[in-house]
Image (cartoon, rainbow, N blue to C red):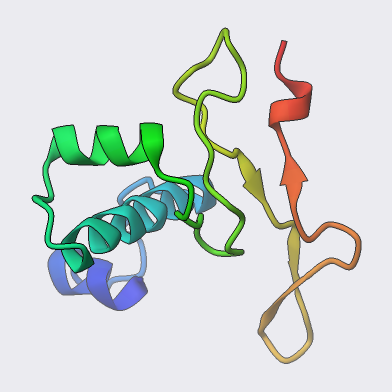
Length: 111
């Protein structure tokens, strides 16, 4: 991701596009949906993505492959399987999922 950003914004180490972890998860999940459509030979446009999110049962969210299901909360029909892992940096510099927090669903906490 840093390589993509620095190729556009430079390498001074201070640039940002303001896309946090949740934003990256959503963009990558959208890319998975688009790839799913393309693999099936469908058009990849807004209407096709909308229909896929509404009707597909085999889409997986990035990064942890949770099944993507939309309309889980009547008051928030655009919320789709709002789950993500809780991670931490380890001494080697890698990010690992905190045991017991593999997938925390925010859907259960929506009003």
